Structure formats: structure tokens, C-alpha cells
Image (tube, rainbow, N blue to C red; front, side, top):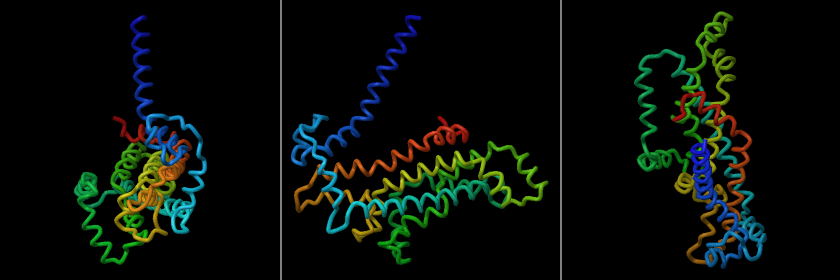
Length: 279
């Protein structure tokens, strides 16, 4: 009994330490957003500001050259929402095809799809840029949104694993009732894979909202910048950086992700555990 208590105490202490390590960067950012710009790195060791400077949020929200951060938030929302809808809809259809439909070369196509998960973005970055440049898509949202409508391999695999847990007897029963493959997908499969779809949607929204490299490569007009790229404008080597305003907008930029995560977090556990992705 005494050994069990000691073991639990050590576990709790370790969990508390790891939690502090994980939370510290976030707490430091929020604290810095309330400090005077010149004091952010002078007393960087302190998480408690000497004076609270809420005006950092007002100054930061004003943005640059008449473009407020509201515009950047709208741009990020458009990119993230449309790309998420496209990636989830297309990935669910493709996952259903791999899980339930028989077609020639199914295993080869599946291996090819899985192989694309191994490719780092740096390898496809230049060929994609050349291709999108020839299409005339540079400085538009198309390179950031349209590819998601052709499926995301990770989401396809996750949803496909979830579909495989659904008994095929439901498909057979639907066929007896006169449903074709499309009807089975819409009326039987989609309602049952909602947890996996929601899990994929949360990850997709987070990845698109946080994406910096894609907008940096394809967008050149500041009015089209998302929040992730607009934050870079605070760091101008030709002028004094307003660190307080930059950390204030950085703090606001993570709020949508927190809200979505806390609303739909139960779907993450349910979706991952039910699709066999755990461990």
C-alpha cells in the first residue's frame, strides 16, 4: 500500500513538471502581450508584468497600412474553413472507396497514396510552385485550398480504419432495401463515421490556421495575408519591432484553435480510439 502511494506521488509530481514545461511558453507569450514593448526581453524571466499594457491589443489590432488584423482573421478563416470542408469531404469519399469498393489495382493505388505521406513538403514545394505558377494561381488562395479537395492521405487512412470497424452486414441490409453504393455511403457510412470526420476536421483546421510556409510561398499581397503570415510584418528589420503588439496578436491568433478544440475534443478521443490509431 505504501509503495502504491509513493508511486502515485512520483507520477503526480512528474505530470505536474511536464505540464509546467508545456504551459510555460504559452504563459510567457500571454504575459509578454501585457508588457511594454521595451521590457519584453529585459525582464523575460518574469511572468508577472510590472504594469499591464492592454493597449498592446489595440495597437496590434490596427495592423499595417490601413489593413487591420480583422482582415487577416477573415482571410485565415476563409482558407481554413474551405480547405477543411474540402479535405474532409474528399477524404471520406476516397476512404469509403478503399474500404468498401472493389476496383482494379486497389492495393497499388493504396500503397501509392500511403507513400505520399512519407514525402516531406520540402520535396514537393518546388514542383508544386512551378505547376501552380503555370496555372496562374500565384497570389491567390487556390494553391492553399484546391489541393485539399483531392484528399489528405492521413485523413483517408484514419477514416478508412474507422469504416472497417463498421459491420458489412449493414451494407448488405441497405442493398436489400434497394440502396446503391452512393446511397449506402450517404445513409449508412457517413452518419457512423462522424467522430472520425470531426477528428480530421479539427486537425485540418489547426494545420491550415497555423500554416506559415504555404502563404509565404504563394501570397505576395498583404491584403490577402492570413494571421500566421501577418504576424511576420511586426518584425521589420528597418524599424523598431513592437513586441508587445506582436505577442498580443499572437495570443488572439490561438483563440479560434482553443475554442474549436475544447468544443470538439471528445470527438478526437472517440475518433482515434475507434479507428485503431491509438499507439
